[in-house]
Every structure is written in structure tokens, then in C-alpha cells.
Image (tube, rainbow over all chains, first blue to last red):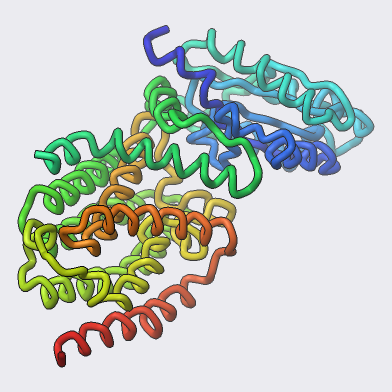
Length: 163
Length: 275
């Protein structure tokens, strides 16, 4: 908690990743970036790059193909970072729950800090969720964070220990 | 004295230019836009991230880019020779290219190659521009250019137009933001930098703004009001162009530079030499 921590809330950079949802949430995210809601007035930018992002915004029920990519994105983001799960699919799968190709929600793969309910959540809910995420983000430290449900083999494959 | 202050505070000034640019861009898209100090908030936030580097050489090259960029600006403002300043700018870009091609990420390597394409496009034009300044003023010295009594813009209209269309290549703006293509190769050379190391690149870009607009200022000669008008015009024109055009292929960028811009500038230089 140094001098620079005060400026965290001024520039949250978002990384958006869709893990196999229906694109409804993504349209709402684009609406939030568009002139009417204009999230850039809070300093938030949509960076497509995990290395420079602070908030991981995940939509969709995590499909089995996306699982490793989501883990990688989470691990590539430098701390402090927060994860926001958006939409009903992210909360345990939504309408896709218990399908053979689905991991039933973001929480089964990586730890989630903020949940935004709704199908799809409207832009005001999204902005509210990001404000909540910033409140959590301000209290986080620079220590390393790991994902949930990791096996030793997975950690070895991803090369986290060398980092 | 002013040039010393300008050189030392170049990153801060460039940050304000970038902040103004973000507001102008937002207003052109009928948005509200971030506050003026937003680039500095980003700067402080990046300071607070956990440093992750790919390998030390990569990080060093990122910092080298910032230092070389600042050095090129110092040579331009304090030093004597415009030509040397153009060549020092090449060193800055080369540091970026070497750093970007030293990692395994394919986007980064692709960005490095495209950055070289940028260099092929704009570097001959920069040299031609400096040569045309020499023909008008009779010296490569920036002090002589700033004390020249005529109006360089009247002698070099085609060179100024060519330079105006080169600025998007230098500052990575549409339609020539080929190397940085954010939707395509997510930042290109800067993709693997994070936290404090990305900061070096982010700040290096602010210095590049000052570097480029100083050249636009030189077209006013000793009439500083004209130089200021040209800088403001160039700034607004670039933003308008950035917001209203889509990205071109790198081949079309190089073709445009070599078929349209360089002959145009060369024609102006030839006419100047004949008269």
C-alpha cells in the first residue's frame, strides 16, 4: 500500500474473454464502451492483452476447450488483479449447466472476486460490477495469486514455478 | 533555455499531449472521454504492478527505447544537427524491434517486422525533409532554422503535406497503425511488456509526440505563431484522420510512401534546387 496504490482506481484496464457464451454479454460490454455509457471516462480501457490488464472480465460457461486458455490468461496477468464473472453462464453454467462439454462456471477454474448477475446484465450492472471490482482490487497486494483446483502436473505444465 | 526545459520535461509535456489527444478523440466520437491527467494515472498504476519480464534483454530493450527516444529528442532540441536527430530516432526504433524479435510470441515478432516496414516508409521521407530544410535555410542547424526569416512552409508545401501524411506512421495512428494494430496483433512490439517495463514504452510514445510535432513546428521558421498554428493543425488533422479511416495493409502503406509521398517530396526538393 504505497503512494501509487491510490491511482489504481483511476485506470482499470480490462481484459475481456468469452469462454463459449452466446455473445449476449459481449454485446453489452461493447455497449458499455460505446458513446452512451462510455466507460473510458473512468479511465477503463479494453486491452486485448493479459500482460497489461488489471481486471479479467469473463463471460460464458467455461467449455472444456477454453479451460486451459482461461487458466493461462489468469496466470499471465500480473498482480494485483481481479476476476469478474459476468452473466448467468459464468455463475455455474446457466442454461448450459451439466452439459458434457462444460465446466459449470468460472469459479471451478479460477477464483472469482465479483459476480455480475443477469442474462445478459445491462451496461449499468456491468459498470456497477467494475466499481465493486475496483474496491476489491484496491485492497489486494502484489503477491502471487494462484488458481483454484490446480493439480501439480498442471502447474508444472504451465511453468508457474519458474515465473 | 526553453529547449533545455522542453527536453527535461518532455515526458510530462508529452503526457499532456496524449491526454488532450484522448479527450479530442472521445469528443470526435461524441463520447465524454477520460480526464486530462489520465495518462499519468495509467503511469502510476503501472508502477504498482508486479514486475514480470520475459528475459532481461527484452526488458532492457524496452528501457533502451525510452532512453534513445529521449536522447533523439535532446539531440533535436539541444543539439545542432537535424540529420543526426533523425538517425538517433532510428536507434530508438531499432531497440524496440530487437527487443520485440527476441521473444517467442509470434505477435511480437510480426509486430517487429511491421515496425521495420514503418521505418522503410517514413525514414527516407524524414531525411528528404531535413535535406529540404538545408536547401531553404542553408544549414542543418536547428537554431538557424528557427532564426530563418522567410516562411519555410511557402517554400516546402509539398514536403509539409508529405510529412503530415507521414505522422500517422510515426505515431502509430490509423490508417497506418500497421505495427501496433490493436485488434489484429494486439499492440505488436509492445505485447510482451508488462507493468513497469511497459511503462517505458508507454512514456517513450509520449516523447515521440514531442519529437514529431517539433518537426511540424520547424516549418514556421522564425515565425513562432505560424509554427504553433501548424502544430495545432497537424494535431487536429491527425486525430481526424485517425478516427475516420480504417487500417491499411502494410504493403499499401509502403507503396503509398514510395509511390506518392517520396516522389512528392522529391519533386519539391528538385524544384527548390532548380530555382
